[in-house]
Amino acid sequence: MKLFQCQSCGNILYFENRTCQRCGHRLAYLPEARTLSALTPAGGEDWTPLAVPDRPSRFCANAVHDACNWLVPPGSGDAFCLACRHNGTIPDVSNPEYLAKWREMEFAKHRLFYSLLRWNLPLKTRAEDPEHGLIFHFLADPPENQGPKVMTGHDNGVITIALVEADDAEREKRRREMGEPYRTLLGHFRHEVGHHYWDLLVRDAGRLEACRAVFGDDSQDYDAALQRHYEEGTPANWQESFVSAYATTHPWEDFAETWAHYLHIVDTLEMASAFGMQVHPLLDAGGELAARIDFDPYEAQSIEQIMAAWLPFVFALNSVNRAMGQGDLYPFVLAPPVIAKLGFIHGLVHGTI
Image (cartoon, rainbow, N blue to C red; front, side, top):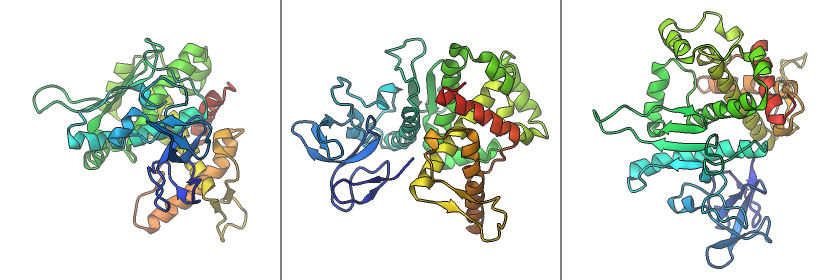
């Protein structure tokens, strides 16, 4: 993610901003132009983006719920933007609690789509591709004793996110119960969409053998592997080959976890670059912990270029967090086999595998 600037007054803006706090202009994100723009009314429902004044457009229909700040691409007949047109089921917006949680989910989902669109990854809706199109269901748990709780997961392009995951206290409770060092809404979206792109970029693209050479044999029984994981736990030396404990469950989960971490790393580095951050510890005479993020991580030439910036940067951020009495911002170890897996994901998104 990067910073943006108001075209009217030069104020620095964030991706989720709806209004410029300095000049009052309404704001919208233009996915086809990859920019956040100040707007002026163009008559009716249309708005003129100051960034591209020759391309007036209208807001996504979800803007009325303050759940989206994207414009529909000019000339499109869709009521929804490029991200929201993938929604299948949304919560009952007449329920204030559900509406607030759905908004949080949309903030995370739109950050996911920022990345998917940056790499121009395939994005077909369920209407465009009834068998493999990407669709999201945001579901609330049924009343107590009236049915099973909603499970977050993926099934052939259908991604279900449990609405309760937008409750910070409940999500933290689940994180502790499951022994996870990290659990966020954005992490859920990035992980589950990783399963979708395994289908599209590996299974359906003739890359199964190449993927198995890195992640292992995915033909092993998934349900049995999941049961074994929860009954026996993780291997003692799992950090030598896996990015997370859950990644040890099955090659599908290893791929999805690694995919999510690749998105975490690239998007975080882009924000660091937007702030002009660099790492140069005074005590690091040899320069092993130095890094200058002077490139676009989304267009990085190799995983080595990304790692050369990420490892010193995240070491510094983890140290800052500890100085504040907080846990590590990125509580994961990237051993060489894990970096090789991240390199495979890098090749997939850049089409070099």
